[in-house]
Length: 146
Image (tube, rainbow, N blue to C red; front, side, top):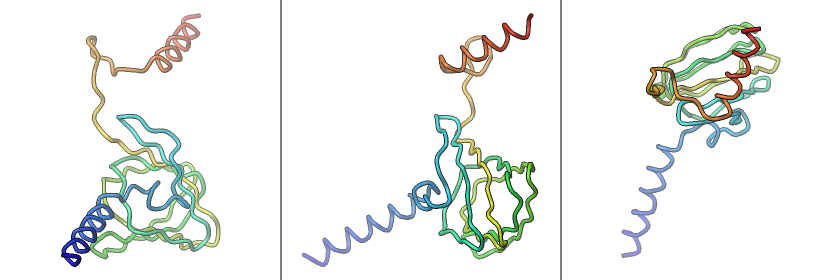
């Protein structure tokens, strides 16, 4: 009886760890949540020299490189890809599980904008906005008309 209970708990824990690979939870040292809503997850990325991450995943999205770097990505099947990033560069990445290693002697900083869902449209076909965004856009458009 005790062994069945232990095996059930172990199986649940293993399943939870397989699902919980959000980088902000698995790797909070390297990934900090900057903003999130139902459409996107914006994450600040920081790796010190020669730092490595655990296996994690991101939704497909765009990385905007703030400081250059030489990185090694290893996917869940062991495939290795080295990337040289330049400051100001933007790249699309499909969703995938991977580990990261900063191969450089300096820190690497970036912002990852993960796309969670397709945006919904309002009645007039424009993407829906929250009240704060609507106010900012209205102020911008009023200034542009002057």
